[in-house]
Length: 261
Image (cartoon, one colour):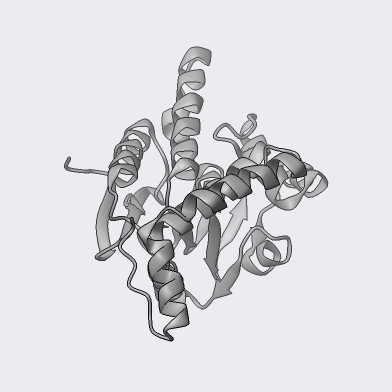
């Protein structure tokens, strides 16, 4: 598929780089962009050689500055419902990827942009990054999962404050509240993302995938059932060739050569 609003490329052989590419619109999300994101995510999910996804925005001003307000202005209630459902499906597709997805936030991540970053497994932010859910200033609430993911990441009280005031926060506060995992200088953002992606890509692919599955599904379970779920995944991993290779390499004091099987 030829994309008009995003780019999808291999940063390295097993590392995908997905860029929202509407810099003149500060990478705002409209229906066409969401459709392209959905297509790209489906492609990544089907690629058994994929190890990590990096997500960013084109230019140095914005990761994604939000949903496209010009497109939303004339929406009816039913059209708004469909737009919200489309955006929510895309965010769920990011979260449901079998591989880790890392957001590289290089500027404004507001509204739908903050929601896209939160749908990734974690965030690396540049020092100039700005986060927020300012939808109340437009007379609407977040519509792509912002109230739900922000409350889970930052806690109920802080999420309530941010979504009801529309207050925007800088990278240092995002780091302090647990919204971002790392903050780096802008020129180091891609290098830091690739560094972390390479660390993941060097590990046993099946083990990485089941770790993500265990954490995400376990969050919806009580502790006892979450631990039982983890035990089942632990046992299943013993049937993989990568488990045999990893343990043999450790005992033989050499680097493991994982094949993802």
